[in-house]
Image (cartoon, rainbow, N blue to C red; front, side, top):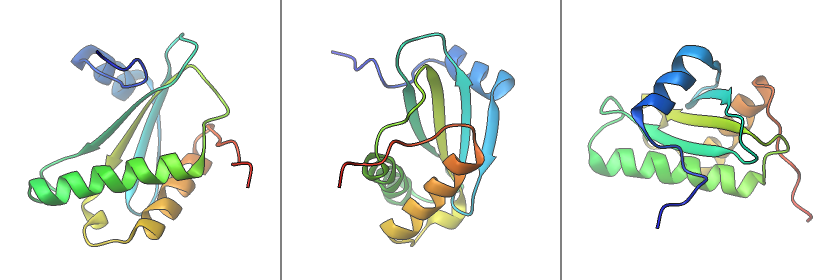
Length: 116
């Protein structure tokens, strides 16, 4: 069963890259575009420039954990693509979390604070 909050399909990615906006930070680049739905669709990418399969999978895991730990997005109805830069290799989760936070802050998207 497919999860609805995961961005899939070449057409969707191309639309985000062509017609969306971007924001970057030291370890992550963020592309986002309105999707006309009631929920956000996320994607986490790491190209071969990041390294071998182990390095790319770690980069994706770090980005996913960073987004999860920062909380939910306030705005809904966006396609959001997080792309790892090759500088992410060898970084700790805290550094990536800070980088993701900076990229989101540079975009018009915002996180809701966790109830801690």
